[in-house]
Image 1 (cartoon, rainbow, N blue to C red):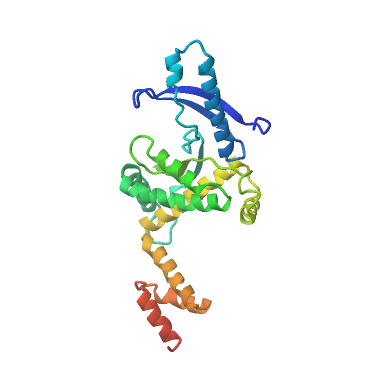
Image 2: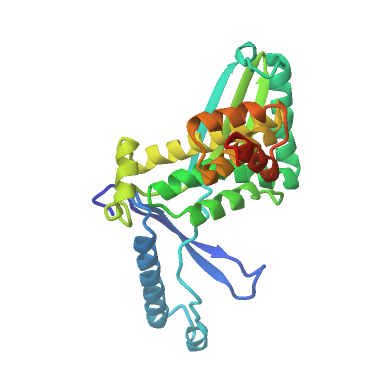
Length: 290
């Protein structure tokens, strides 16, 4: 790991006795460069445990009773990486926020910012808001052979770091400028693990231009920000169900084996109607004379 420019950055003793009697941690920070590094970290931590036991056993600073009472509970990495942050940001003049829904750029920006603020203060909304962010992030994490469960756990822990669960994205509309950004704590790898084994992972990384781990972090953050922008745009204009129901409609038509021409007919047919499975079947049978 050192040869690749990384390795152990620091080791510190953390006193947790106020929260759990006689409990201390040895906290180590690592730079794993382009690998996820889970196996490397866990191997190091297990050696730390062995070395600690040996050092205590031979030290004159501990009584025999203290030496006998030493208990190493576990040696394991944490998927919480609050110091490993990537930011993706977009900004433009508010007047450039033209939307085909019929509302003005100023109204769009105002409603968009309000939607983000609601997710910053309301955990019920923040949960679904961040779930949408992770829809974009997880897809790329999985495609590149990384651990989406670790990514999810870290992101949600970070969203609750001040004691309340909040939005991962933020927005301002100051001085006529619309600004939208995300801060995402994430640790991913582009070497080791599945990256050299799974053909689809190799293809995905090649498609992305064989990014470094830092570049992949940036791609993940952009994916999450774009996904969130799309969802919020729908919510503050036409409503989320328009897109959801179009997808639902196409899923039904795919199951029925509809042609591209028939699909286009149904998109037009349901433009001002509520999509239901029953209604789609009825119209499909009418078209085909069944």
